[in-house]
Length: 185
Image (cartoon, rainbow, N blue to C red):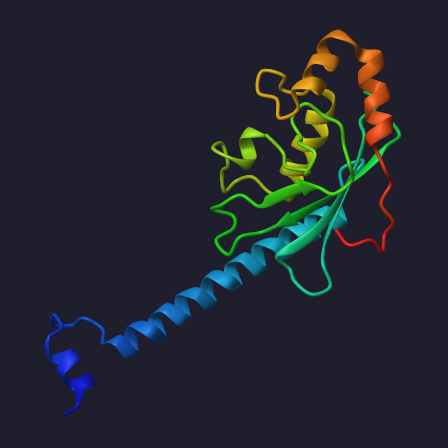
């Protein structure tokens, strides 16, 4: 008995067969991947042609979905003259879902935990497809100078930021460690 034939006989008229559905799904996945690739290539070109001050980002040599970024600490903040490396991992449905962004350089900050995870609304529930790598990195750079102490991941850092700036700066310098370019991010 031909079971493939039986499956098509029970389908609604005009409905694709299992084989046709698989081909359609593959085509959709391929189109989505091409769309993500095109978007990320465009964002990379924008960053290369007109980089914002103190920010850079590049994909890894092996995957356009995995980037390393660098942010310079903003002037007149405890992070001035410090440089931070971050990793960005883009989902297959980017830009409709936010990238996963982590600080790779150890950082002492109210909105970053000791694993490098970041509490920032645009990386969570406020994500929008109009946002891009540049806007995320600029937001993170801004967050360095203006933490959201109402929602800290590091309560001690929030407390020191608000009540003991000298100790906060000391903790920032104790925690910060420059990563070498060849270190795994």
